[in-house]
Figure 1 (cartoon, one colour):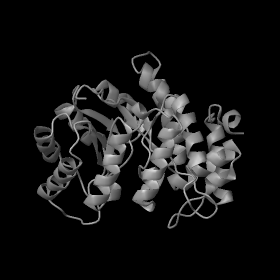
Figure 2: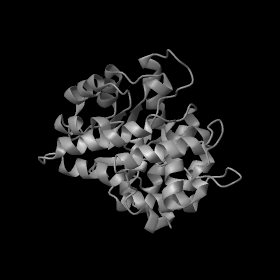
Figure 3: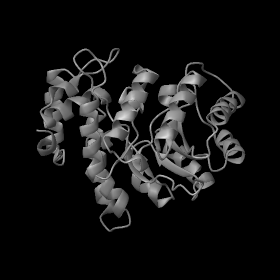
Figure 4: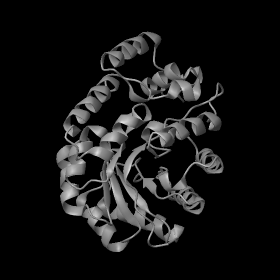
Length: 310
């Protein structure tokens, strides 16, 4: 059990499709996940861009079971399991471990602000002790622009000392390359894998010992991002990175989740992909037209989504 390989490469916080009565649509999600895996991208389901915090723990457990039942590779799964309530985090984490998922991506409790490292350490420790399973592999999730609760360098150090082999990595969605670089310099190793939260930093992270990236736009541009992760030492790596930045830059002009869902709906021909759960609202048609025009200008395509989903 202790020799389980740590995750590397590109993962996507997979967007979640909803039915017309706003229930999670497992069949559409399975199809999307298969397309991502076929494009060499792992499945960080229940991430920020999955609208995870708009879903209940039972909904997430049910979806995860259906993904596994559908034969999607558990060794490519890193579901988000961090919730505000410890019992929810424990239940979801334990379920992911029992299903064989390679790891879990764990937000800190994010409702209360200004909490101490001591409080966050106790929260993670409580989850680890309650799950009580040597198969558990936790990838911390640092996203202060959204959570407003930071995972500091001293907290990482303390968790690594207390739970080696269990706390095995981090996704840094700070958007601050200097922070990611410091994490890489201090902690990157065979036992602790560091993923920037956007492909914008993918090449630099790989050059500094990073493990890959976990990126929203891997939902829509998977093949190109995964290609750079595989060929980052090639002569055209900087050119590849520039191309990824162009596509990312287009999507970042718009609310990311509705924009990605609208583009997937357009390319797949499945209009249901446009739906988001409140409080989010769908991408307006005029905005989508602007987005599609801008994407066409940077030679964007969905790499076979049309034939797979049409």
